[in-house]
Length: 216
Image (cartoon, rainbow, N blue to C red):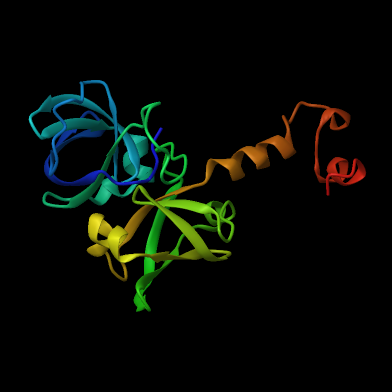
């Protein structure tokens, strides 16, 4: 589990095939000496497991499914990456609960300054955008942001200068792709309301039930 508050940046220093997947070598800009093999690290928002650690450098395997659902399928040597190590129980939750399970890939439509912030408009598949709500949370390449506006196939966020400076979003522009993870609460609510396919309708909690019992 992560917070969406980026610890620091890293550089993709190596890529090699491992079966149908890939092993990534990443050089971190900050010390990860207290990390251990087997720990989870968010890399551009995707939860990866460190399989080797040597100084500021670590390696992680990426499965074929992760390659297909994230921007790692088109990553190249020298790419800059957002890094965040897994949340500990003693840590503050400065952003929002981020699982590191990417829902889809978004494409930046627009990046423009507005007052003391930068507006980022991102297009993505409607099947992913459906879980976004105005003022709700979203992780863009692992960065916890607040949704300003939402439409059927995209959304808009506002990025303050500090966040821009501390993340790879400073390098991103129109046409670049980013990993998107929507807030898990929306997924749980949908699952809760739909129930199991084999479950009888009388045992389900749905919008009709909530209205009838005075919750809506």
